[in-house]
Length: 269
Length: 265
Image 1 (cartoon, rainbow over the protein chains, first blue to last red):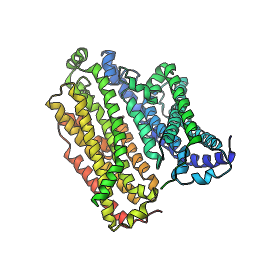
Image 2 (cartoon, chains in turn orange, yellow):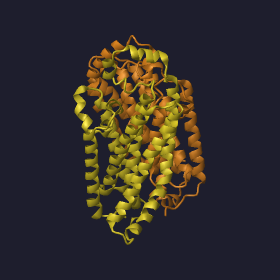
Image 3 (cartoon, rainbow over the protein chains, first blue to last red):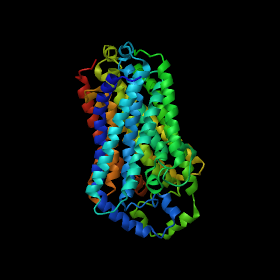
Image 4 (cartoon, one colour):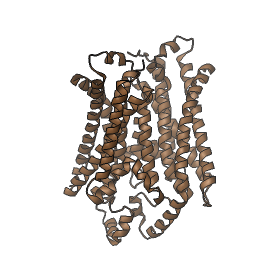
């Protein structure tokens, strides 16, 4: 149920693209980190003068949950942007995973080979996963190396930082699995980019207001809420969200497999 | 040519509906949050007790969440971002999709000069983007109705939508230009989106440090900053001129490049 040659071929294609996505992640860190010191100093002054205001007031402006004058507070700013990049990457891999053969007219070639569809999708999924993990490895290295260089003497809890970074895995799994499910729900994906952007940015838009008070049911739809950086840093994982995420991943994968193993492969006209 | 515009508009319809659906969800969530802050007496009291200079310094007055204007001011960045992305994708795919769908040979042998084909397709993408801005406006107005908006709100929303329209216009031109100038048609939309995202990141980085003030020239998201719009009550003529000039330059480059483009088959 697994073909090493398909896996290797896919992995080579994916790693080249993962390199670009990783560069994006590194670039975000490089752009932000040098300004940590001045930002933290300004934030400290501002927060001092804001202390006399009630918490509810600060929350109304998206402030006060976590101090921006700390390494982890600044991390939450960076991590949101990183999450957008990771979401679009994983969604793209998911949508293109098997639909790519159809839009590039190579499906008939692949299907006439003596490999089962199950082996095809297993091998492709494994390759995409490895590429995502490689991107996450770059994220870990660039975050820790970046803070080693730019923390300007500010102390921070490395365990909390690691916990924050670990959320990238369930986060990306969501978009990979849902992307696959979406690609199998439509008749033909001609170009994966709009789908990936719609998924990634749609989820971001839904979670956009999650850091200001009050809970809205629609936010239960988006992993940007499940893995909100500030609450991860302050309280760790929230179990109901983590479980919900994994359940959605499982359902989406089952649906994707179920459809792919039965579907009529469309010819591109 | 009119028929080609119609055909393109029809094929954009589904994607327009999806973008609009995401936008509606965003507005629904945002207004549900607004409910908790609206006219919250405790918060208004605090705001009034604070010195005006202090509030201005932190942009708090412009984006005061207890008022409808403030709330829609916060939403401006999401509106701008979505308008920019959608317009960039429509602009890029209008030109590029013929090549990656392998229908370019069919379209280009029609008895129409290439410039007319480019005009028809780019125009359709532009009209779709304009429709998206108008839909955003309509959805915002409908969402705001419950809260009895005053004339100030209508004026501010009009400015914000003008800002969104200019940003969408520039992104549309960017998408068209990248599709006309780029070698890989399948990449055109991604490239346009990357440029939009980089501009967005620049606009957030710019706020970190005063030394980065110069970055505001490079990111259209700052040209139409909601806080500035609220304070000034008008668009900044200089920024509008830059936007229009950049759009014209991109469109001119697109026509020059597409006329002699080697179509990938």
